[in-house]
View: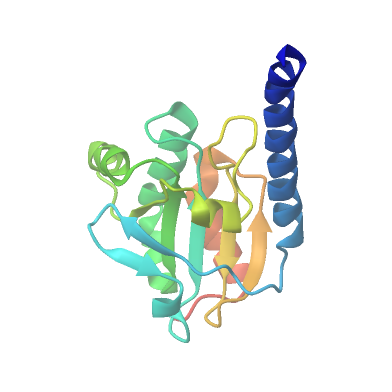
Length: 181
């Protein structure tokens, strides 16, 4: 009996590793040209946003970040705000997103005076569908998804420079031809 009980933690570890491996495979499977996973997430402005509401109308940029009110995420979110003059005329829907609660993201957005919504995915279901969950710490990886008007992934940027994130997003939207000016 004690041998069986001793193996339960090992089984739990094996299961956790297997699930983490499955998430990693899912992340590798999602690529440019694929249909973006649907989402319906609450924004810090109190509205709920979904992929379907933009279909045929606007391209979407979702910049996932690890944790609200941390140094790198603060710099990235501020950069998007500071570059709003370059982003807004492009007529794309752009968001940052994390697995934080709506309450935590709202406090963070208010603290920074953001002029765009942060999307909250506390259940992590959308983050898992996009393959951004870091199995080591359970938060989102800092990846940005560029999705065209038809819901197809045009680019997945996994090398984000937080300080220039806003400029980089504007340049990428232009280079991918996602702007609907």
